Image (cartoon, rainbow over all chains, first blue to last red; front, side, top):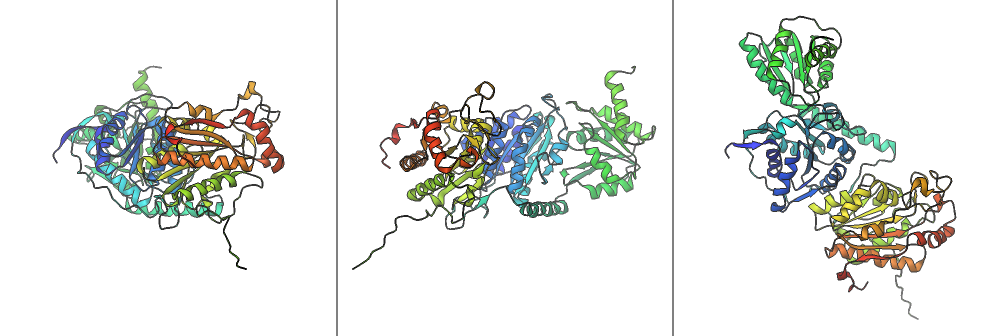
Length: 375
Length: 256
């Protein structure tokens, strides 16, 4: 199949169809709505289930029920929708069934706006719902990578009986890029042994997230944790760009990483040895490789479209061995390559050695930038 | 003289032998049995998927001998929708109490009905929250004392009881909506016929079906099991009249 010019949300939805999704349950929300619209057009024609639910709460619970049958099912939404879905996601995690959730993130908190953001890092990566569980989080940085992430997400969800989040920002949902879709996967005819399908010729299957005896809940939580340790061991993914001889490592994911790579290109032309470390799995976080990079470079610059959420994870791994700086834009603003280039130049000139929380220095610079010089 | 033995009463295959955790005098056990008998009689046990709620019947799956899932509070109709849409060949039913269905799950039940989901809902209305220890439910009667309406439900402050059978009967997607009671043998027999017709509705693809069962909660009502049955007939039925609120004409020819 050749490359076509594809719109992000539609391409992700079609990728899910090609990956064999048998049920989609969603609720319209900008900037993810084209995902739902594509499913509305395509799923009934394929004889597969599509329901526009009354709310994101209902949508995720339809996904929960449908996933209990062992079939590939999913939803897609955007930040406020994910907040509503967190109840169901926790139940799904506690029931140990595979589900894929796509979050096309927008500016927040609250109603925020519909512009691209990475402000859901904590919510998506650190759990978000109640209780002891660990979602797998994939953060692709192009339409093509997001297409490929959808099939991977289903495979990982089934392998680990886990929730898998694919998180992109509104830029990726809305933009058009040349990309290639995979061929149509055949729908399996066999159900997994744990699925509810009607107890014909076997003992009943019960799928629940309640363990009323704390001893049983602890055993369950330990099982989830051990499974997570397997995920950490096997499923770490990242990408590197121009890092071999780099003195400065930019750490960024998704769109931020993509914008940063343009700035890196320009900075290299100026002779600044800067490279990019891009976590593809935000959970499990690629900490082993970041640890190695921290021993190689002289400075780390974290770039995000939020207030410095992944920064916490970088600081946790680096443990003060290398100075860390931060540059972020919030509220639905995507940084321009020029802004990041300026940051690279500033860091390369090694002015203003950062002491303490790199956020503090950044806040002062950002305030000056967006409010004007004088105050 | 020849003696012959005849089985006149036994546990339905659709129930496990597990002892229930329900309080003495609670009608959950009766409701469970009616569903199990109907599923047995229709030969649906190996095809059925039940959806348990949050509330006293949260462990219903321990008592039914069939595939079961356990929903979040109020979300059983959404979960049942998901199951039925990807597995339309299965018989799918929810079992929900009044807090679950008529309070936190109001959106899910109304929209499942509006969509005409081919699922069956068994709604246990005992006018109180049982599992959390007797708080006011959306179906608590005006003036009725609960731990969260200690001076009696004041309709000025806490509103009026919600009548689910009436509400769901006006939805175009509903195929069979009735209210029955479990307070005596005659009414239990009528309730069983209604449960049968609700499952028949689903089998025939006639849309959403719900049987509301007026039930007792002697523990949280603070009266004896016997008095609780009287409370249903004397206090609850006047507020929640029994009857057929919506019956698809295609069901009228079925004799059960």
